[in-house]
Amino acid sequence: MRKRSFTNAQGVLIVLLVLLLIAGAVAIRRSHKHRQSYSASFDYYVLSLSWAPEYCTTHPADKSAECRPGNHSGFVLHGLWPQSQDGPPPMNCQAASPVSSAIVRHMLEYFPSRGLVQHEWAKHGTCTGLSAQDYFGKVEQAFNELKLPERFRNPEHDQSLSPRDIEHALATANSAPPEAFRISCHNKELVGVQACLTRDLKYQPCTASVQECTTNPVRMQAQ
Image (cartoon, rainbow, N blue to C red):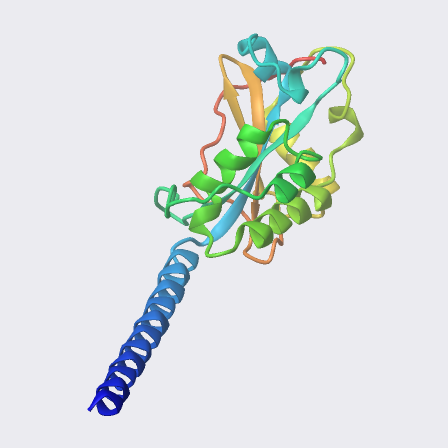
């Protein structure tokens, strides 16, 4: 009797293990479909750069790398954002695990602070359907392939420029469509620039969902 009872117990255990394996496989498939749905819920990317002189003037308490005295920061990487053609962009799509310390250390070559790396992953990266490693790989690629005209790298004097002139100069430098760049501004000051990119990071025209500066001209503060 004991032997038979032991055999029955083994059978029950095997059945439970099989059920757990099936449940795990179903959960993985559902998770994969869930990630795919996020991946399919945006149309293109927006590469966003902020103009550090304006940002640091309006955020005097910021002690990050872009505002450090003597750092001579110009355009600084803000993020790579999933964008919709004609509606609001997706944000904060999933619960975000902290980005690994190895990825953060590497991305500090591009981002001014650890907090911004974590923030961009939680708010934007989780909507791409990509892992953190793959998402930041795209961020790095998009930023490295962007060419900035020399006149915008380290201006020694304030400049008053038309947003259209800035956008045209960026499009020309990157052999991009004329509408691939948008300027953001506030109180007649240049705040940043956005570049519109396909999912495979080729320049494309921005749509009306990406706001554009309507002030003309705007002031580009010297560093």
